[in-house]
Length: 248
Image (tube, rainbow, N blue to C red):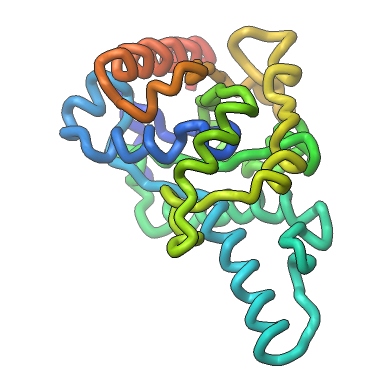
């Protein structure tokens, strides 16, 4: 029989923001903390990550194998690395829900101790968050809270250039996009437009999912000093209060 989620940690944190906004650095910071500090300051338990980037990268690799080794058509992407069908962006979101369901299947008591981080980025070119959120599973929507890391496009571009390591393009912390592709896919995002009517929750498939925005315009995630810690604590405390007010 499943235990109830812990009363003092987020069961699921949906982590969004432009590429290179600081999501991976924030996760690395949380993972390095002592468990008691992470729980007391940030309402975060032991961490499990569900990220769509490894799924996406596998499609790229499979398409290259088909093309180079077998002279067969690419299944998912064209020669420039864009999806052949826009629906594939939503397939990734559905798969995030499936991966979360597997975690819960294998550990029904998961949320007594763990917070699951569900991470992805979406730009309006491929539907934005307005199109993506409805494909999240019922379980994620029912228990999740959204943390959006906000940076302008120019900051995303700068940090994307800085972090890219051509020898490790599959790395969570070191992958990047060419400037022209980042511009097409992520210059325009719709998160602020989506939340304009409500300062605390986002309506998604009949639910009100709480959210909070971590302002990273001044790039606190690179230095990870006291200012970053204080802002993260305040933002997650706000999100926690909104989740408690929602009653789940």
